[in-house]
Length: 195
Image (cartoon, rainbow, N blue to C red; front, top):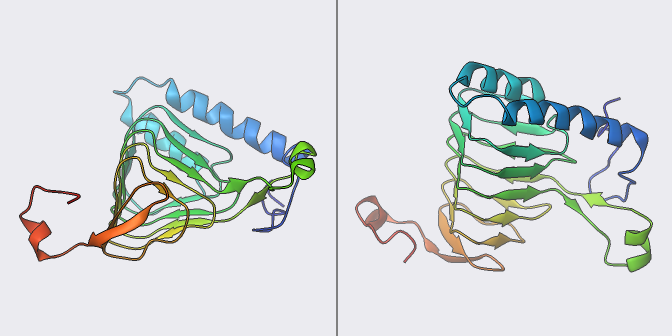
């Protein structure tokens, strides 16, 4: 059983269990190696990520630095691009579709903590999966919280905090992130990207 197979989405678990600690240490070692590879050594960078992730459907480019908890719960589609400082807390599955682009400083967080102070003090956490469907663009400094699905062809504007599902084919903005409007024919020629 892998380090995270015992975690049931939405149920409390203790991340200080030695199984989880060792899983994170293993991933951190691989990530450290990736983050310190010369940027020109694209083949080694890609191979390190492929060996870390649960699955990779095709081509991708992840700019350094990159951070995650385990790596084994990250599943990416074809033609994924992430700018610098992508952080994925992948306690449970993070599924990223085809043609997904991330701006800099994006965080995808499957892990959360109880509202009750004593359970937080006791070190308990919960986790819910994140799904980002095909053709999504997530702008710089966006935060995606546990349990969220972002629908295909949508755009999350820079600085958004996504606390609930976003439907397909929309521009969403703000904190908390809300649908601003649908993406339409005008967007094929407009330069007013989020208006």
